[in-house]
Amino acid sequence: MIQSNRHLSSPATEKPEPERLLALPEVEQQTSLKKTTIYGLVRDGKFPPPIRLTRRASRWPASQVQAWIVDRIKAGAV
Image 1 (cartoon, rainbow, N blue to C red):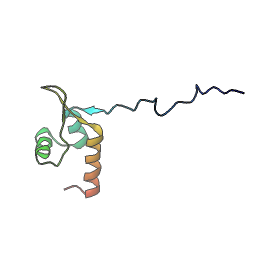
Image 2: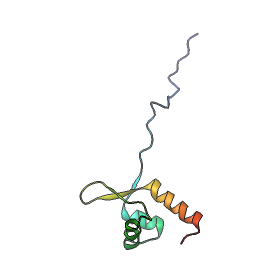
Image 3: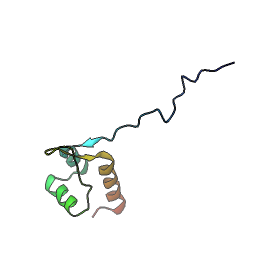
Image 4: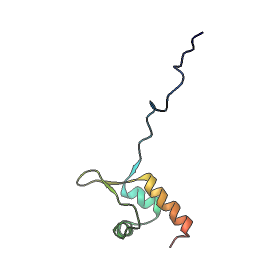
């Protein structure tokens, strides 16, 4: 008896979810910080830098922003 494996999906053929990229207003909303503070923290190496998409567009990987928030909570904030 031959069984069909069509209903089984191989992990190698499944495409991973693409990383969600956040615009500055979304980063501000998630962190409760404003633009100046976010860019100051980026400059000081204390917040993940944005990814440059074009000359005028930058976005933050959602996973990096979430990781920063979790780290701040674990550290008890400032």
